[in-house]
Length: 106
Image (tube, rainbow, N blue to C red; front, top):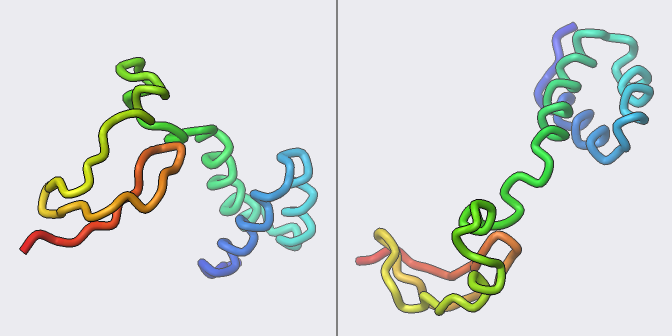
């Protein structure tokens, strides 16, 4: 059975919200016993599950080069040039780092 990308995306998004033991029954019902479709949805679900907490915090913390406290206390980079961008203001933080508004350097 040929499936379209939108159908796969909808099935994946619904299944990923379920606990892994519930997914098999969900896919069996929603894929109308189409083993190929179940396989196409199961592969990205497996990859999603195995990713775990990948990139939930900066890599420098993961490898022990800085602590979370050091990272959170690091000086602001507002006004500095980073590549071809200049940071204007800090607009918030996430667990994985600072978010800055920026504009291309002219």
